[in-house]
Length: 477
Image (cartoon, rainbow, N blue to C red; front, side, top):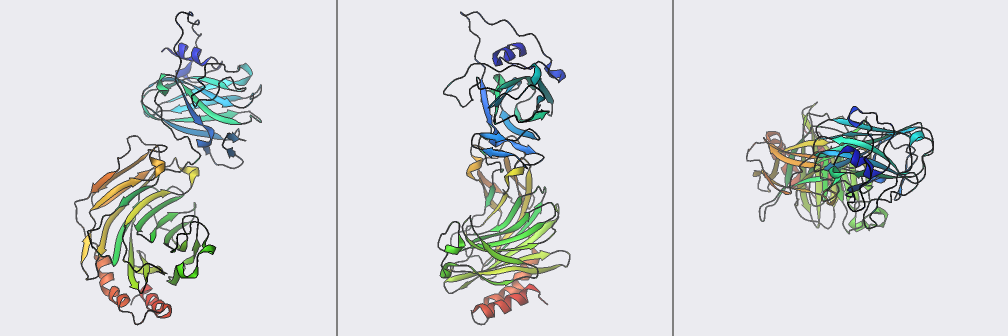
């Protein structure tokens, strides 16, 4: 399809086209009734799925779209399976006014950019075909404006940026409709959740294998805001490192309550509540909810991208409960320190269901790519023997099935790499990964051998005695 024919099908092309790739041409004459023009494919990108740049301040989102959007750029990502030219119809609730301009910038998978700009003083309302059964909004809606053409030089993800200049009170923006053969079979997230999909490593245990200690290392390769690189996950909790703000990073250790309450820890009976036994210097401990409930602890600590960090989880069965203790190796003092120790009721099991994950816990920057290496995962048995975890199964959350497919996982040297976000092509299929490269964490073996027996044979089982023993372990001599 020629670019003139494409614009003719869109029925409201821009009078001003700013890119050299998108110079205006005279539309072709309408086809004769006996040979109607083919209907241009349309693919709708809802406004609620767009990222706001530089930030969300003042923007209003709801199911119908976004308002107060004119003072910032809105960015969408769509995966196209072919190259070609497209028109972009901006779906507005009302006329945008007589002054100002709208621009759409398309950056394709080859790194080539094309631009279409519409001067609203010279524009007219878009009118065109619409299939009532499609997800594409009615193009007869007041205010819908079409910008064309944009050139997509390579199939893959394309970033589309809507920029308004000089507009005031443009009203509700429902989204963008991509029109043209290149939009056929497009894929994109169409939900308000803009987090990248969470990706996981699940470490299989052998039948009947008991785990007293769980050791792992982590290296953040990239570190966007709202990243959680969870290293030592198990059936009752999780332990890892997090980016909380431009100036704050944390080491996080949390353990779930018993009883199954989903949100409000105030509803958890005392006999089901996780109890804090001890915490290291500077560690903040408290409650958490809204993802199950339980005991939370964190240490504000300036961990660095590119550096390797060592984490260790110990477990001791105590009557009908299990005491879980999390330790972090502080490289600046070449020593282990306690993060926290929690007593988890109604457990009496060693850690199982072992896992690690890479999570984007804030949606405002789910377009950033998060890459992290998890390496040297080991388990120590009650008899003192160690086994390295060389196998893992890669999985992702439900958001990664249809909405977000920009993720990857692979084995490299002593570790597994997990990546999400960034709108990369060719996602890794769910399945098994294997390292096949044994390596040994001498520091963890030495630590568990030296201090593991002290925990296992601590006199008595009352919280007071456990606290004394565990606090001593936080600063071993």
